[in-house]
Length: 211
Image (cartoon, rainbow, N blue to C red; front, side, top):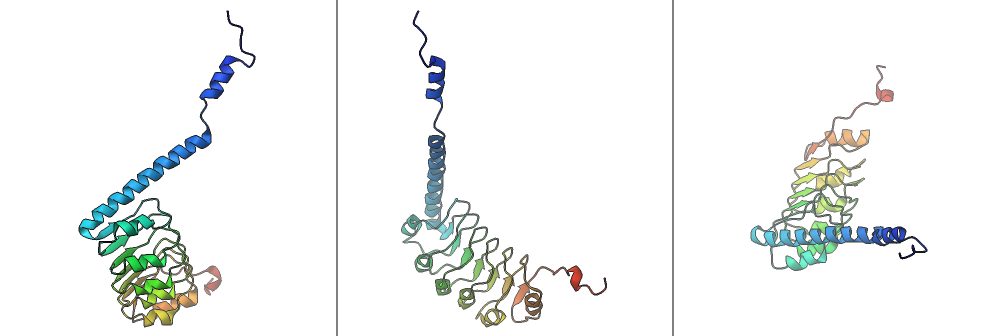
């Protein structure tokens, strides 16, 4: 009979069979990343047929450089980047996709936009809802053909009213579910040139003189 190991065979065997948690995590991450890449490439190939690029729910933290390469011969009409974790849009995006008419950036983690967004001369609809904006970038109001802006469900407290009214083509702005100040909301309600969608403001107790 073979004598038992000094350290115990069962202990050594169990330790040898126990996987490294870091290796398991890396394997899962690599697998998920691989699926995301496959999804992005597939969506880009689809967009070559109908010129509408849908990269929603692709786990993106930014627009991959590969997208610009894959779409270099396609004239996009629209781009949907919603439901990702994107924090910013680089100026390169406007340079490569300068003819898009609709851009959906909703449900991301953006708090600002590059000044170059004003170069999107064909853009008519922009959706930046469900992000982290505390104010509307003035560059938005310089987009020459922008008609509809959805900026609902952000953290916007104030709006440059004069810039908004000076926007060349703006018709509708959705600012619902934002913590607008009382004075800003009152001024927006008096704006007639642009249709403003607002959430009715709940009067605080200290403002209610009937109490």
